[in-house]
Image 1 (cartoon, one colour):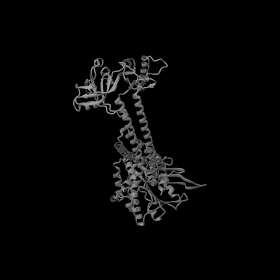
Image 2 (cartoon, one colour):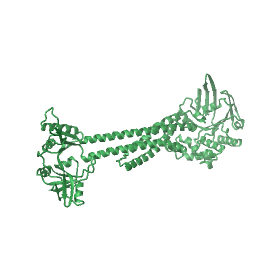
Image 3 (cartoon, rainbow over the protein chains, first blue to last red):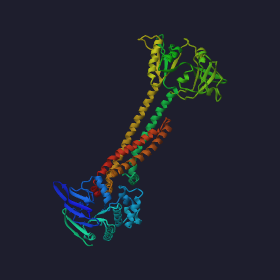
Image 4 (cartoon, one colour):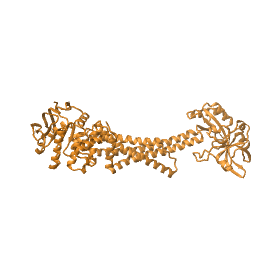
Length: 230
Length: 409
């Protein structure tokens, strides 16, 4: 089976004044389709940089990155945009929904940038929202929704393109415990039922406990990579 | 890859959110477009009015008048010399290649009487070519016959004003009027021409055969001399050539030596008017150019607001990039937003411009002409301004790094 994510000696360096910061240092790993991985580590450990690179939002300084068998480490902006559109769904800590725009239209946004026919957009967005139990909130604006609901809209947006990979950066960081549990159960369900590969960044052990594999970062290196039984 | 309806919807929403800001930005474009349309309308109206005047005196018209005489050291001014003749007129017609036709003129004012009505008018003795020279048509009746000119027949053509004053609403054809007590039969009624550029009533006129005028109305010391000769050049391009040919021919016929001054004057009426027309057109263009500057200033306003908008919406740009928006998707979004802003402004500006132009024509009685061309031009220009000044902010937005844009607070 080919890995969905395969990194080979991935490096990311920043020059800050005279010194060089190694945000990622020789990171090599494989993540296979259907996995549910939690990336952990203290702040500054490189986990966010790792997420940005595998999310094709940032380019590595050195090393190679294969996403679904395609080398994306040297692609240009527009090619990366297309990869993000087709292969990756993002869920952010701060939800990152467009304000003054209904839930339905927020979910439609990724479909604006692919070949979906304009007439099919609302239907597909509606289906994604239904899957997350938001049938009744389609025409609400983000400021009329609770934090949990907003995050579910964001997840619907990540799913609407049928992307095989879902990247979540501290998805429960802005949510209370009860809602966090709901969202995590949702991830587990999506992973099990829809076979979506999930990589999530968190620093909370409670959250990482839902995953089946935990990777720990420290100073830009992987320090542990083990299975987890939820 | 650009989805116009969706992008348009996004743009309209963004503009609606900041209503006041959008309205003020549009105002620059509105004023610019309205100014361009009004200025072009005023200019076009003025030059059209002059063109109309040219058409009423007859196009490609040259007038030859005699020179000045000097009596006991007193110079009497141009037109006083009795040295232009009917024969000169015929010679010009037949020998100058750049001339289409000519009509001699022997004119004077006279009292005309019909029944119990009377009226003072200007009587022109001329020949049958006068209608062609002045590009005049008959409302009813007929032109002079050639033998009437040769035989000094007492027939006449009436201008509309004269006919109205003598006959009210009756048909003047075949009626006999008396000009300076001499009976003349009306054979034709001229179409109305209206006022000349100088404000004279061109319809207050009577044409009679030049021979009859000479014999019965305005006898001259030297028979066969005329007050002026009206010449129609073959074409507008031939005007200068015709002028030169006439001058050469008349110098030759009047036996003027190389050192002697002309004893006649050649006036190119059409050229004078065309110069006036050109001046008014240049004036209009100048005004429109000034108006265009205000449109440019409006465009800078758009650029300013679009730059603010791009900064404000950095996070939105980041989100769109994260879910797959490419360089041109982002660029088009902001260009279309600028375009929507400028085109709505342009549309309102067109309306306002037409309104102001109409108001001006109502208040000042100027001739004002709004052409479709000027409307399309200024509307199109507002679109160009939108694209031009929208491009830089859009370009800036499209080059943002998605991570930085997403982190932007």
